Length: 118
Image (tube, rainbow, N blue to C red):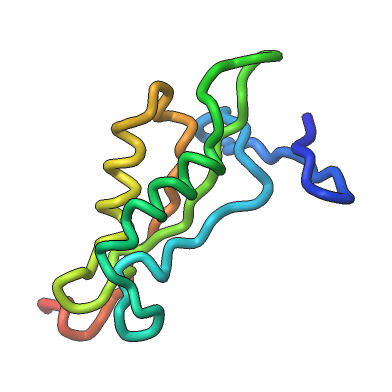
């Protein structure tokens, strides 16, 4: 299985625990909610939604299963009151899909000193 990207063919990896093919190129969401470094504004959410829809394409299956599209996020993607905004947006986009399993989310936890309790 291969995914086409301009001027090269890249193998389509499979997530071993899910037995699901995913895109070889993922999308980072660090800027979603980060006003400090990326000048994020919630008014941009429609543009973000449009970009996600474009990259996800149709959920219809043409020649078998379409691969999932990988999005990288983290609990601290966003600043201040917008902390976690990227995960909130991705969750909403995933729920709105006809085949939500195609929107694959990888996340991580930032262990800040103020989060440690003992």
